[in-house]
Amino acid sequence: FGDRCLAGFKVVVSAGPTYEDIDPVRFIGNRSSGQMGFAVAAAAVAAGAEVTLVAGPVSLATPAGLHRRVDVRSAAQMHAAVLEAATHADVYIGAAAVGDYRPQEVSAQKLKKRDGGELVLHLDENPDILASLSAQTAHPFLVGFAAETHDVATYAQGKLRHKGLDMIAANQVGGGLGFEAADNALTLYWADGSVELPRVAKTELARQLIARVAERYRATRA
Ligand code: PMT
Image (cartoon, rainbow, N blue to C red; front, top):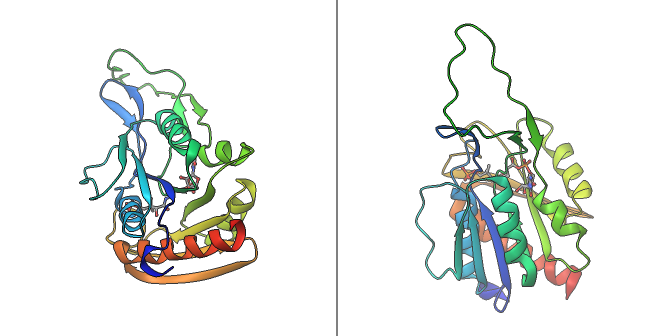
């Protein structure tokens, strides 16, 4: 299948962080820049796919040739946008760093300083996008990411099983890799195999990931 390994495929990619608002000026977010997910979307376009990119709050240009870009802010918005876009998709690749929790209440007014008193934020768990998709009877080929500071392989393989994924791309956070960096390294795991993709620019790494996704898709679904 070579360079056009996803020709005729519909692919949905999520990218970037989510922001969970606390009040009109504050939010809970994370360090994802969106670079990894945008590179994956661009690589999927280059491989011939019709690509929808669901992006959290990032400042990145839309990759050329994209079918559709949907910009969202919160995890709940990303959940809704991905589920809608994935209805007829062949592959979903979750590169976004989705917030696991959101404030129970979003204050309509700016919270004021408490002059020495502590401030307690109550958080509710956000729904898991990948788990929601894998619970559907007919769902796309599911690729998750796992960003970990320690025990990367163990946590990644746990997420592969618990979220019902076809493949997971694990990355170590720190040391100039992962969040915000231009380079990354990934270890891909699936039910009965794994492969290491050593440190390289995210654009090239995304190309290698897409080739592996196309290969595994054909091995399990064709
Ligand atoms: O954006 P960059 O600066 O380029 O950085 C890239 C990256 C490090 C963010 C990316 O490579 C990466 O690893 N993304 C996943 C980050 C992460 O923290 O994932 P997680 O371990 O919290 O979640 C595991 C998987 O479940 C992910 O595919 C995530 O999209 C998905 N998830 C998580 C929570 C949730 N509510 N719904 C989900 O679908």
